[in-house]
Image (tube, rainbow, N blue to C red; front, top):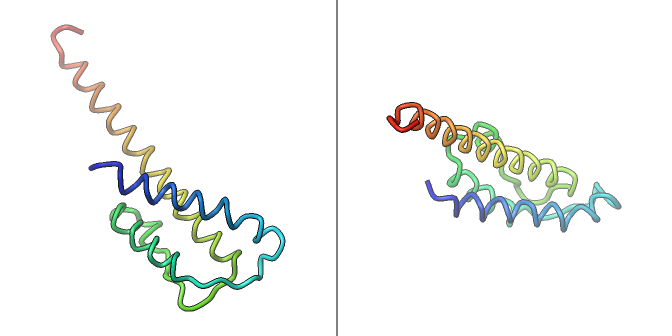
Length: 105
């Protein structure tokens, strides 16, 4: 699987958290429209279809608070990090298996 969809979603999530953090620190109850988040959520679900955490995140209907949006973005961020970690561990284990089978090791 190419990392491109993961990287795009990961970078977008990080940018949204970074840009919304000052607002959530000042006014966590401020309302915000969920349209852009819903599009990002759809991309995250397509990029990581086997992630239960991402699968469980619900779309935003209309408006929500910035604090709720940050919470949803944080779930996406954690799920993406977990997927990268799992993928890297699987690649490491495959490499170890190949090295163990190699007649030159």
